[in-house]
Amino acid sequence: MTTTPDYSSLDPCVHCGFCLPACPTYLATGDEADSPRGRIVLMRALERGELGPEDDALVQHLDACLGCLGCEPVCPSGVGYGRGIQTAREQLFATRRLSPLAALVLAVFRREGLWRPLFTAARLLRATGVPRLLAGRSRTGFGMGMLAATEPLSPTDTVIPSEARDLLTPAAEPGSARSLASLGVTGQGSSPSLRPSASPSSPTVALFRGCVMDALFDHVHDATVRTLEANGYRVIEPAGQACCGALHEHAGDRASAEALARLNVAALTNSADYIVVNSAGCGALLKEYGHLLGTEAAAALAARVRDVSELLAQAGPRPGGPLPLDVAYDAPCHLQHAQRVQAAPLAVLGAIPSLRLRLLPSSDKCCGSAGIYSIVRPAMARAVLDLKIESFAGADPLPDIVATGNPGCLMQIGAGLRAAGLPIRVAHPVELLDESYWRGGVYGTAVRGER
Ligand code: SF4
Ligand code: SF4
Image 1 (cartoon, rainbow, N blue to C red):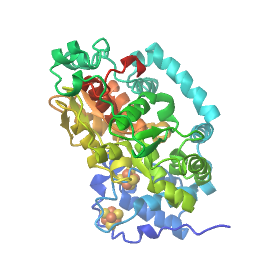
Image 2 (cartoon, helix red, strand yellow):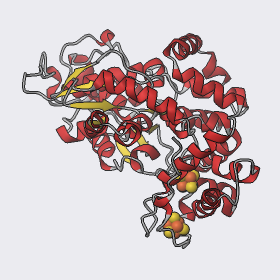
Image 3 (spheres, protein in one colour):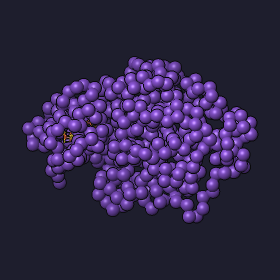
Image 4 (cartoon, helix red, strand yellow):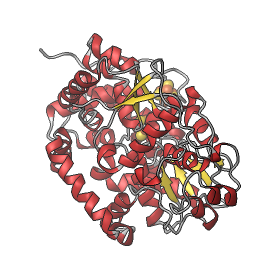
């Protein structure tokens, strides 16, 4: 059965243009057809059949949309741009071939038997240190920079100021008198075991592992589990999960997104009070599973999905030990616009004593990652990223770390910083809270090697 594409969410548009300055692709090209207002006109032409999928210009301008939803919160008429562009992508997907590269990437992420070995090879390459050395501006160098950006923060990282590097030195055992006294950590450090044990009444949380996060950011998963447990949650990890399907959904491949979503609904239904996600892109789609699948089970699951920052903020979070770092928070589009989660990540970073938190002028702008966008449209992705990197380069003082809660953003921004030669590292906010908890003795006498 063929259903008529539904563009009704675009009906309120009055073509005022207030959304243009919020659109990263319009800022990069200055072309009205690369703006939300221009794309709405194109989508309406597609709906009426005045332009079709064979129209190269239409496809180019719609494909160039990042799906960042930066245009939605600034629209005074409440236009649902995201629903509109999703409808257009599904309509285009049904009637044209994807590029071979896009088709290959989506095929890989459909099956764990394909993406798992690929990322295992990437981890082996990362462990050699070669990606860090080869990171640069060329396409290969940028790819190496993306892989290097998946490394956990390390005490040997030369961009970490010496004052803070001491805090990250494994030899200084968390909770030890030497490290805490010499660093001036006060409060909980000398107690033998302060990590609260979960009680039967503690809320249970099922960790969504995903694909890229599971394969390249397992250190963020570990930090997520530790920080949640330190804040009174009981964390479980249900088996049978799959990639969330966001990459497929963004590309208009709804059937693949639905198939992956069904696997996750089966794995996670009735598993816990909450489903916690530490990847903004995955979390945004998991919260939309009800709309995607149209079933009660999917809607019930979606209602229990939370970004890790939401759960931590809901519990406090408890403060840790000091980390004297300059940190610029960069808001992932799928957290701030799609999920409308803005204050919680700031509360997480705000629980770290001595951390100097800043929001730079570009902090709410897309970085150009956008799922597989940076792979299939590298030129536009880099043009969008450059606007953000310029803002970091112009900051005085330079931040030590850019904190952001999405793997694509971590990799895109991390690679851009290395390509620009800026001595700034990237980290997920829970990585920093976790480090602060180690240093503050929140994890008690646990051996750091457990990390
Ligand atoms: S989407 Fe909203 S802000 Fe943009 S032109 Fe239409 S009404 Fe104006
Ligand atoms: S979703 Fe982002 S890139 Fe697309 S039109 Fe809106 S602001 Fe521009």
